[in-house]
Length: 499
Ligand code: GLN
Image 1 (spheres, rainbow, N blue to C red):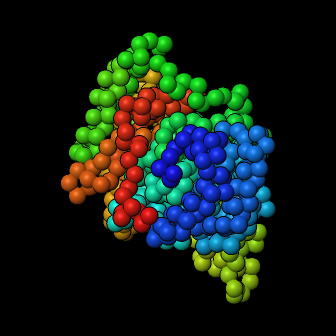
Image 2: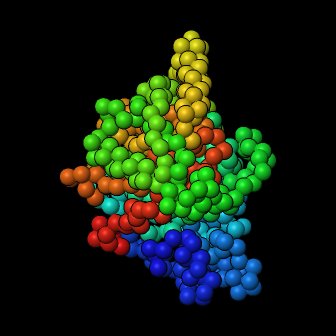
Image 3: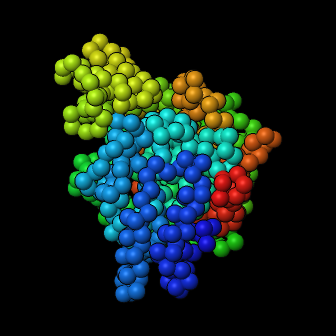
């Protein structure tokens, strides 16, 4: 049962092969058995079963929708009533939100059953899920490896089949990269598609929620329920709701079923295939591009000349916004407060010193520095200008192609502890995902192979980048690949994942 996709589980619920309560129980059992992966921060059996019973009632009444009774895990950055909402931080270790994030609320209204809250890098800062106050998450394919970050708990949960789907957030790659490292499918929508209301803020001009699941088809279903205008988010896009499944299974240009993607032009940015790309990742990506040619697509070389600058630009803008967003954690209004202090200032200092981990402190320091008088023009303003050029470069590229493809990350998942002493090495691993976030474009990761040699058990993800609002077409392109291949069907062995 746990290998089934959302669509398959829907059929099992509708045919009464299984009830929502039984389904929830079986996943809760798997979560318990796979505790060593450390994928979950918050589990509350009773709350989950209560939602499952409500779903069963809706199914019995004949009022079930496409997602009623299907389980989902939420990244602990989304505030949820009932479960704690920690953002992976000591600062919010005991934080109980009085309301649900819009994403959580919409999925709940759609009838989904929350299995609990997944582990993450503290305040979503990281690429390996080793920055969590609650400890690192292990990659279910190889427990010596990181699962990627910052949505590493969500990715590990879906990969180990502890949940059929999960939510994630992507500020600079945190849906795509962990999806890539764990062999699952994840999509970061166009900035503004998914409400940020109730998503604990990291860098507000970049943060974007999205679904993580086994397949593009499942992600499309989830996005239907998660997305859409929200008046409580000031940067939410005012657009008509759309059905993201509408192109699935169709041909690109209404042509021949044998060549479903005939007419599709795939741009390969030459900067994404340069020296820094590991050979095994390159081989898997090239094989995937070949498969796309077989489906009828044509490949064109494009250029994104400022790719390298995306790292300094992102690591100026994201910390700048973070330093401002995180100023609300002062020990007064939310979260941790030091037990002993001399006066108000000392209380602020001690609460923040104790509540935040080292990476978060590093970002606050960098952020306040680049925003300070005298450095603002030299760093922050320059970064904003280059951000604009990065976005413009994508528009140039999209004149020649319909989607852009390349690797998600320069290597497969690295070993736990391998990059923890060297934050810059960790930042460099974000090279292929950051510019998409800076431009606000939609991007996704689709499993397309495995590494070589000692990495033969570590998945590789293909990145698909679309133009603004082109999610439905991107999902079609990803789904066509998944109809022709079975990389997305592969799951880690029970001995590796603990279940
Ligand atoms: N790895 C990037 C960072 O550390 C991106 C994280 C994210 O997307 N939340 O900031």
